[in-house]
Amino acid sequence: MARTPLLTTRVLLVCAAIGVATGILGGIAGWVTLPVLAGPAFLYGLVLGSHVLPGIIAQEVLRRPLVALVTHVIAALIASAFNPAWTLRFLGTALLFGAIQEGVAALTRYRAWGAWRFFLSAAVIGVFVAIVVFFAAHLGVQPLWAQIAYLVLSVLGPIAWTAVGMAVGTALSRAGVARR
View (cartoon, rainbow, N blue to C red):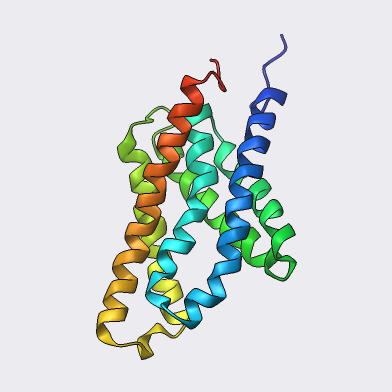
């Protein structure tokens, strides 16, 4: 008896559409990264947080395994067209964020799709990014208020973008993008 594949053509096409749309946003985020880091570096968490969108929207719409990871990779490839020098950064971020989102979903065996699950993955991403970028971008040389603002915004950025992604995903589902 033939089994239905995990990632059907329909699922892959939805992932591709979401990946292209969010990849354009990722490309824009890539453009503003250097000016933000050179200026108001404490805002970088809000910029980087936008990269949670591909997986959040895909999981909210499709509620299936691997859709976050696939959509993240497609979005990273699209974002790379805007800034080819950052291709490895886009792909690394896509794999990291997608793996965290898939990991949290896998912990619930892809059965729990409440808002808490999405916000949990966003918080994990935010804490991880806050710590890594703080040291990688040498934000310790910033004034104390900027360091605190950076850490808070780095955790809240992915959470805020997750709320946006959930709203978009819900609207797409209501529009019939992912009939079950």
